Image 1: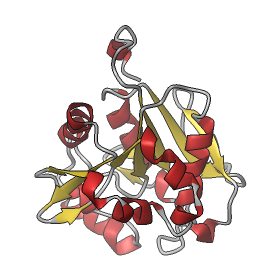
Image 2: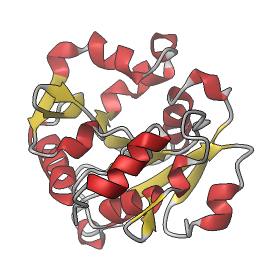
Image 3: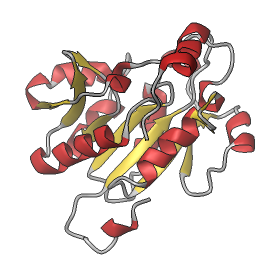
Length: 212
């Protein structure tokens, strides 16, 4: 990840987890491996993370998934396994990342679903800048009044994310601490562009002006 942070021990430690353990039922093929403009969704996200002020990244995959490991170079990121039933949603992957980070000083965790690959680098930087400036419990990007991804959770929220309160998803934790959520206004529709179906993917290929 970004080596410029290594000498600034006083700076909060920021990790990222890319959620890539879903069924991809509606897409019919693993979304992490979908290709656009010469790279897979997962590769695009890892590129964004690699040049941001993030100290370490992990990719969460299903414990029975070998496709991602066999097809994408993950040598520069950690791997965590979501061993829960896939119908439980993304919270199992978030919990796996928090458990993986338990023995490290991690102050913030950026959570990035792999089906949101269209987020621009400037947006990622703005989210992180707001996180470091305001140190909220949760940092969320918002475009045209709509919240999106990636979302940053502070260490103070990890216990809630691990608790039964979050069994139905991290959104319950966000709603439960509404007064501690910081919205970051962005001009990037990619934060809300969930590529979930073949038609979404086709539209992305045909119409999206890929952000660099």
